Length: 384
View 1 (cartoon, helix red, strand yellow):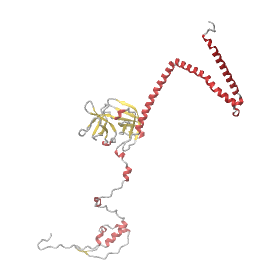
View 2 (cartoon, rainbow, N blue to C red):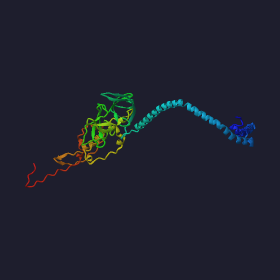
View 3 (cartoon, one colour):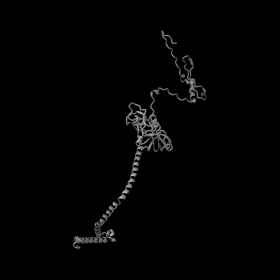
View 4 (cartoon, one colour):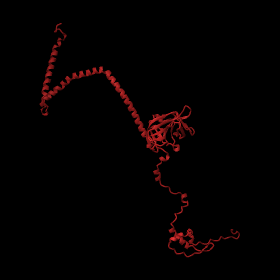
């Protein structure tokens, strides 16, 4: 078959015209580039009509010429991603594994910060000073259940101080040294804690037996406790402050009442040690000293007043001598003779040596009338 008989022969003229048009466009673009690339046209005042026309023509032409390059680049990237998907998948899996570890760390830090906030917000009524500590050692055994906290004598911790977590009472301090203190948990067999049921205000003793749920002994009252009742410290005996949360009541397998401790809701890692000694510690002595003194009652007014303090000897000698001189002579039994009062004498230091018996009766200078004799009737006998 000859070339003229080819089916594509009809496309000869259109292809020629297309080539001619492309050549013309390229020539125009080249001319515009040559005209716009002159150095003097970079000046603002020389930016004339020629430069504006060239920029107007080059913008769409440049965009059209750059489009195939962009398409080819996108296709190459797609082919490359297709063949590199396996290696990229392995890299993403490794990154995801690392991110999961950081996620676990972030969750742990979030939980720790939440526990810190709750622990720092722990308050008692009345307020009691507290010391924050961290549990560093866990000592468990069949006959001991204690913890070791990293706070001791340097922070004012003393044996007997109660220890609390963010959820409730943990135990009390039984030993203190510099930088550490040993905490006896409520579950230890040596632990005895006075508690009360919040609903009925009934009293009991929380006794540890080595298990996770200590039992309630010495329950008093009629139907004092029910399933799920909340238990608090009663403060009896002054060992612990009143109102600290302990746990909830439950019936054990042995039929005895036991307590699900509130401190078991989370691990005992961070605690606060209450610097509580006795109830006199929570009294505001300053306010008590500023209270006004009540007025004396009727019974206090009738009480015998205390004698005034003794006067100095030099001052007491003058009235003593004057009283002695003014003492009248007895004229007879029961009759006092009025006499002339003696003139006062000057005070002499030697008069202190005289006995004070004469000054013991200051009222002797006044004349006393004779006592009247009682009248006796004829039909009565005289008194004997």
